[in-house]
Image 1 (cartoon, rainbow, N blue to C red):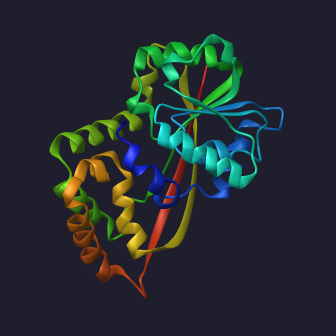
Image 2 (cartoon, helix red, strand yellow):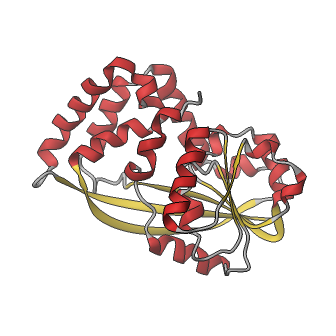
Image 3 (cartoon, rainbow, N blue to C red):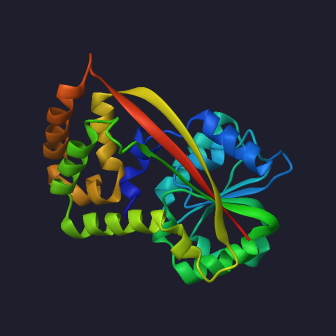
Length: 256
């Protein structure tokens, strides 16, 4: 069982959402159309692949976790979109899969083998295509005053090794020039979309369970204790059970 197996049922609904305007902005920047082919590596429950469904034609999602593949399959069926799903790793995709106009990667780059991934991207990305590294997260500039305490509680309950791994993953995600250094690719423009929404306090607490370092599998018998801690912290920021959240959705475009 993979490290995200116990998070699949929560991930789709509780992670900071990518808003429709994010997909529209990226599609416009890249000139996507129904003739465009897209592959989403580390697709999880298909958030990126299905988000771009109105802006691209052929859609493929790849993930090594069977529970995530099943979640993506259900989401695609519910949305009425055709999404081809492949259980496996990006690095081991066969040459018969062809090339794509856009290769999207969400919070998955730090789980991939760098050398093997770069070699595979060279074949996956069409000549004039792009890699798009996407993220959607709570703004960290003070506009979400509940966030620091929230993350501190997650850190306190998470096994030390897993929290350190999560930190390394964040650094990898931010240091894209280093990841692509020496390859045919380099980061070009950054698309950023800011949105705000109210989120249910209990849902925000349960979001902690969607991260590998504080998943139900990682926490074991401590799940309820951590959730209780998080909710006690969030209560002072709540208005009628709702928390205001400012979200930044970003797409770093990488081209040859």
